[in-house]
Image (cartoon, rainbow, N blue to C red):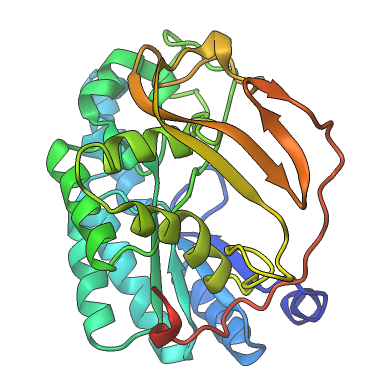
Length: 324
């Protein structure tokens, strides 16, 4: 009931969750369809975390009954094919409602296939992935334990590669952080640990180092998926996502020749760890501005909390032909 009022106020994108049934966050298909219908009627954009929540809860119970360590079997409780199934179901319902759809934090290569087919049919479907799904795998989950409990889970190297190809070809439109820091310790009870990991501060460095230095993407394409496309999809362009007269002076100066090692102790975040601890990188942001004010200079922050401004958006207005 609040969606029309929110859209009128400039809040035009709405994230819905198809997982987390035990946590009472999951929308069943009735409510999902209802949400799509209302969002479409008022011109917004629907976003979904696409995983089959009830099937995954059953698999979790099955493996726990077997006495297995949940950290070891976690990817098996949330397999890629159940991520793809939920993506397909969400796309189908969104098409019935005539609602544009944004798939958040895509992790599975099976999901890439579903989105590829939808885009070939001309459906208004956008897809996002994250640095963790481009660079880390189930082997890192075993190393980091509860600190790497994210959803969808870290998958296999084949999934990493499929996502890079999808970014390069335009099947995946954006790279975002899915930043979810918790004060989790590596040895914490995996079942009780929260979902999510710190990602926002390392996002650009890791995406650049893996994507550009390894030849997955061109530099202009990286800028498109991290800056311009998000601004276009969420109706913030050209105020955001470009450098031109009249746009906000948001910019990053990036040194592609600066070698460094990611370490938690050098991060500005209050998060208690980084999954990229010890990663050697070539390239680092050395300066940034927000609306013309210096935010980062060298390794020092020059602003205090409280500078954020609400910007009304026009999500859901973008035509697929306008996307890079």
